[in-house]
Image: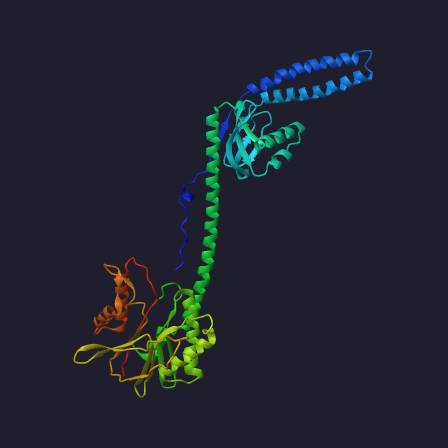
Length: 462
């Protein structure tokens, strides 16, 4: 039987990281703003002096003018940057389920998704402690910066520490240990959530594959069921009877067979190697071989039917090479007119319950040879059995007697199975089936069924 994989409890317990906002600290902007204003003032004064001087058109003056103008642009940009950051009322750092939004430091990292993060560690920038965020593709964070200064800064950070993403504690209103702990916890939570989503996706895929497989096997069950004769047809041909058929899985390696050719009625219980899908595939081959033996080759004697089936199976499956599977069987041929009963068995016996002066269960032992590729194969023995009115024929596979259970979890055994059948004396076959089913269910209890189960009972009424 198919079993769904048990996924970790984290699927039900995991919760996405909560959004955490940490305020920015403006002190760093003051340290940038004041020097930038001072140097901007000095450079403006120098440029004005040079521009108004009589020697402005000299080469040295023009060179000084251009040099000072370049530096003015740099410090002016820093002044604008510091003022803009000073009046920015947004948080310096945001941590949520998607990732990090860094707005701290001189050159903030911006948006960093958790899926891009490989690890969290510590580092230093000048004299400031930083949370070092190692990313999978550092070049992405450098190249997305259009500002030359920002890009250069991130390139230097990546060269120095191995990552362009370093969150400085100096730009945030929080202690470094607390900052590191929060970032690390959020990262680990995101990893759990990511793994949870992966597990959910894998679970959904497994469920989908399982459902597709179950649909296929259930369709195979319908095909296998269509090959089996109906109980109504068996009762019409053979009289009062019952069939207890309990596949271990959806499809079965056990099957029952019945066919009529002229005055002869053939019926059998067969147990193919294995159970589930492999056993079911072999059972289709064996069912077809039985039909061919009696219809195509017009064989009547059960022993010869078994010999022909073994030959056809080897021919169909190529057992002399790779496939070594086969079948056990108990096959009867009954002539209603002459009341002749012939039987042959391959590892499966025939039991006949007979009411005489006392109730007895006659046992006819099979040949200890499976149907299939066997070394030193010999022909099966045919048994002619005298039948009396009221006899009950029991044909069965080994699944019922081999089931484990009971108080001590032991195998039922054929001896106890025989005792159970003896207890059915005088009961209708439909009631016997119910009793056998109830006993099996109670005996098995919580123990798994270990094999396919098939028991057939037929009462000879004429």
